[in-house]
Image 1: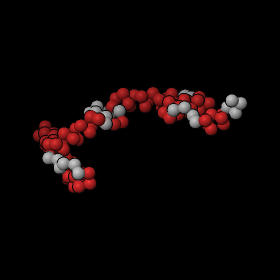
Image 2: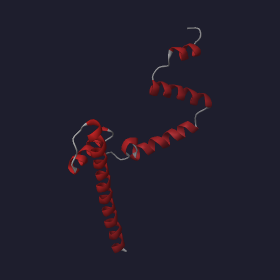
Image 3: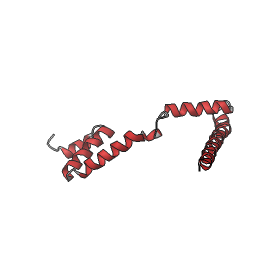
Image 4: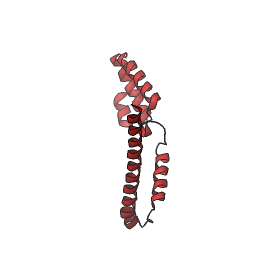
Length: 121
């Protein structure tokens, strides 16, 4: 039984390394065949491509669990909490929540929308 487990671990590591080299090689090939002739940028070596990929990952979300989504344990717990809270809200409370959420995500309403909501102003 343990022998089979180690085989799966070895196969997983080998597959991970293969995917790393394939993805890095593909990124290098795309950069050297697109960015170099189009923008006049220098061609990259394999190690420079790895560095560029690490830099891009750090600038766009880091290496935390869940990647760009910000998932992981905290994300799942937040989702469960909001689902329960949403199910316990009345229709009016849901509407108020969505209005507040829209203002937080999209900023204040434009003038035409404010006038339609408050015609007396």
